[in-house]
Amino acid sequence: MRVVFVGPPGAGKGTQSKLLVDYLAIPHLSTGELLREVIRSGTAVGRTVGPIMAEGKLVPDELVLGVFRERLGRGDCGEGCLLDGVPRTIRQAEAIDEIFAERGEAVDIAIELSVPDAELVRRLNGRGNEPESPRPDDRPEKIPLRLKVYQDQTKPLVDYYQKHGVLRKIDGIGTTEEVFGRIQGAIEAMRSQAGRVTR
Ligand code: AMP
Image (cartoon, rainbow, N blue to C red; front, side, top):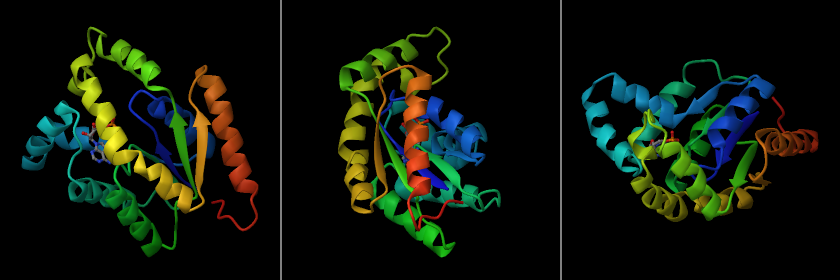
């Protein structure tokens, strides 16, 4: 099963992704993590990407898609994968549909984790104020821009996946277990729908 997570920063995508990849026994593809690896590698690309990420802006589509394509090609995604933090633009969503189509695959479910803005700001402030917070984009002054980038560039994906008939909206308020229970319910409902690819 190929799962996409859509949701603003602070919605809990990272936490829920970890639980879901264990549950479905599929690899976790986080472009944020992959890009942080690129930065650690110290290459010229890493030096380009570092400041963009630190600002909380989006890395150019072609670069992200290159990283994504390379990761998908590693050979462990035959049974599916979970896409965490990608796509983040319509252009990325279309390209990812094409990349999957070349493999005879498709996105089976897009989960929108929905959390009100006030709660997102509260959660992100908590994260950014941790003394040893390792991520510059988690600093409180970056929060408004990251939420705006989500609204302007990523939120349109909700309509995109709705039109493709794969969107499931999940209330992201509650304990980790409560939210995960809702996600499991949506996954199982999708699996039991006739004619769906369930691998
Ligand atoms: P994340 O770990 O998903 O919160 O991503 C951290 C940062 O990496 C983002 O704020 C962007 O700067 C960059 N990034 C991660 N995934 C993407 C993507 N799909 N498209 C553009 N930029 C991305």
